[in-house]
Length: 143
Image (cartoon, rainbow, N blue to C red; front, side, top):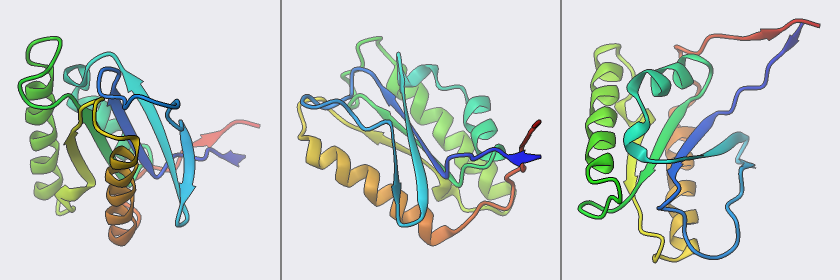
């Protein structure tokens, strides 16, 4: 059986938080980690189950990029995302894992692409120092 390659870091970005300019990279490698970026309609739609499932499926960390506080186009999506990330962080802590494996970032599309890249690369580096997640479940593909 072949082993599925799960991303090490998954970044969920509200489509209204994507910086202006060239399109976002959707996946890349950084210091031995595989990073995948998913665009979502609103950060508030990121249910805690999706985030925990990503961690259980092999991701070492998840990052949700939301609109700046008070600027959500869907009223309260970024506040919902903040509550969900705090819940995931609390659950990780209760499991004896590092709560830093889940993070919320508020970002405006008017900020520079370089700032966005630095924020994501910083998160990836923090995850790299934490190492592999002990809760990841190996997945196998049928040949």
